[in-house]
Amino acid sequence: MPAARELNAWLVVLERELKANECLRRHQLVSRVGVHFALEQCHDLLDNDVAGIHFYTLNRSDATRTIFDSLGIPRQRNTQAPIA
Image (cartoon, rainbow, N blue to C red; front, side, top):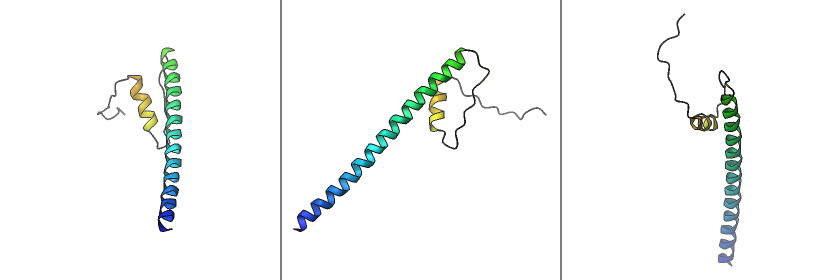
């Protein structure tokens, strides 16, 4: 019977891993859909000559970086101090 218990324990672990993997896949799908939708909105705004776009990242900038990089806008760093 130890082999049956060991097999059952492995099946429990496998089931947990499969559920966790499914949750991760759903999260990734939702993230991709959200990035795609936001990217379409940004393109629409830029096509209609808005002066700029401001992103609120709430300390989670991965999606925002993906959107920004997909827009094809070159990154610029202002190395000079603002004129007072």
